[in-house]
Image 1 (cartoon, rainbow, N blue to C red):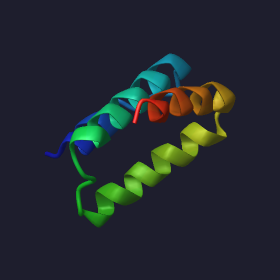
Image 2 (cartoon, rainbow, N blue to C red):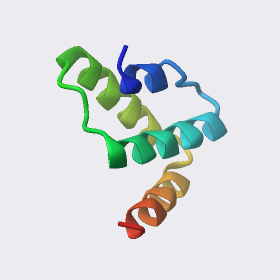
Image 3 (cartoon, rainbow, N blue to C red):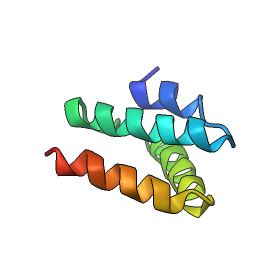
Amino acid sequence: MSWLSQLLERNASDPRIRLELGQKILEQLVVSRLPSDSKLLNKFCDVLFQWLSSSNFKVSVQLCRESFASF
């Protein structure tokens, strides 16, 4: 099981869990590439779109900006 599938299994409707999950995915992307499994990438996109459509979109955008500012 890849690192991405392990993280995606933790997806939940709780905004705090989603924000933590997003942060962990960003941290892992710094050290690893996305897996090439198309089904897994589809699931990743589904989770990403759920995250973006959540009520905490502005919070998640701010966290992303802070994360990418460190690069």
